[in-house]
Every structure is written in structure tokens, then in C-alpha cells.
Image (cartoon, rainbow, N blue to C red):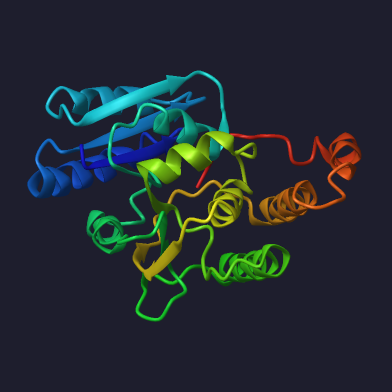
Length: 258
């Protein structure tokens, strides 16, 4: 099988149906049965699971894993990825912000890289409508900190569309220990340390309504998460135990929301 796409989903009944219909139509026409969509439902209290099941009857390429607990974006990606059978394995957000054509660009351009990511910051990216200034500000500050702390020359670590070779995925993703705000950064950092090349291309991205993120709280949690991750990869990793004891409740794992 050529391609596996994991879709982490938490309380997405209002958005995931349109996203899946678009992806199933596009990739079925392009790849036939040589791809699969794996929806990784976690902690959902709405009808997300029922929406996916209704589509499965007509689409054998659509699979689903269900965890009753809110295991976060990273946990859901890891759970879905464990079931993936493709030569290329990636993930994309359930809201449909990344259109299927933009995700397919990752497949086309991965070349010899172990990991390719979509970027909303590179020249040539098409973003519509423009995000609110607070979200743009938080994103840029977060990315600047990541570049400084981890020496990652990546313009957009948090865009929700990434693709890896199956070899790189199985070497990297099961070893990721952080499944919330630092998941993507940990994936990128581990991939670089393992010697796989990382590629980045401009993407098309639509800001979809329905986000449940509270920017103020999330910004603080993102900062704490990447500081903790940096400590884990430093001679001061012993400090993490103290860090967790003092701040663990602040960065406690919560359901992924968009």
C-alpha cells in the first residue's frame, strides 16, 4: 500500500464529515485502493464516531481506531499510526484546513527525505482567510523559540500536515513521549537526530471555524511544554522530575482541540 493518512479526532462531528468526503474522493480517484485513511477517535463525547462509521460502509479505504480516553493529538496519531500499512505514513487535522491536494503535494515532493512537512510560512504558501493576529503572534513566537532552543531550521513546526516514510515513522514515532503541544517538535527533533532528512514545502491552508483553543492558556502551556522537552535533551534532564512535580498540573495532558 502506498499511503496511510492518520486523522486524530476529538469531538469533530461538525467538521470531520466534510473533510473525509473531500479526502476520500480525491485520493480514491488518484490512488484507487492503494491508500487508507485512519481516523483515530479519542475521548469523544459527541457523534464523531458515528459520522465516521456512516462513511465506512461506502469506503473500504476508511478505517477507525477508538480510545475512550482523551489521549491528545500526539497520542491519537501514535495509535492510528500503529495500524498503518502504507509505505508512506502521515497525519492531517480533522478540520479540513489542509485540502487533499495540498497533502498530496507532500507525497509528490518527499523524494529522499524521511519526513516532509507543510509550511504556512514559506514563500508561496496560500493562507485564507488570514488568521487573527493573536494566533499569528503566538505561532511566530513559538516557532522562534523552537528554532533557538532546538536548532531546527523549520519555518512552521505546528502545521497539521506531515508525512514520513514508513521506515522513519516506525523508527521515530513510537519513541515519542510527549503527546500534546510538544509532539510535533519532538518528532522533528528525533527525526533530525536519527539522521533522516527533513523537507519543508509551502502549502495551501484554510482557517476553518470551530476552534476551541483558548489562546492565552494554550500559549503558556506550549511554552512550558517545549521548555520541558529541551530539558529532556540536555545534561539537566534530572531537573525534569522537579519540573513535573511543580508544573505537571499546568501542562497535564488534555484532549486535542482545534
